[in-house]
Image 1 (cartoon, helix red, strand yellow):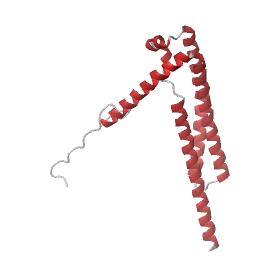
Image 2 (cartoon, one colour; image 1 turned 90 degrees about the vertical axis):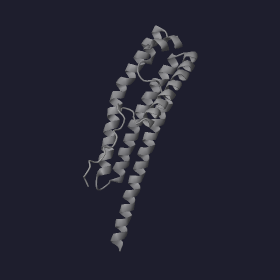
Image 3 (cartoon, helix red, strand yellow; image 1 turned 30 degrees about the horizontal axis):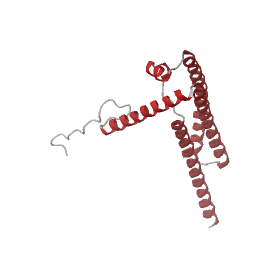
Length: 184
């Protein structure tokens, strides 16, 4: 009787731990998705686009500084992302073990969360530098312009999905083949 109680207690602890870690991972990725959407700049070198240069009245000095900001950010992100992926991999390995060490697992989850936070802080620092570089008028113009472009992209993705194309799919899904006659 005592053994089955201990076994069921252990199983409950393991399930509780896995649920806690899973919930932590959901929070981790949700926070990343929130920060990604909140601190959003358009992809690519938008400050090199002639239309954007004209609309925002970007100076050559601002364009050069935007280049510097972006390259510094991207260089840092290479190392930060690799670090996060390693921590996440270690966490997944620990979760797949038949016997779970709760303390070590939670410590690893904390390292993964801290690594994700470093990436988001780096993104926020880059975003802040861009914001400081642009005038208030330029900032308002870019916000309006790229919010509209983001809505247009989402609408386009939605339309493609309805038409049978998904992001990255080049052809609609194939029609099912009819069964050859006489086959049972």
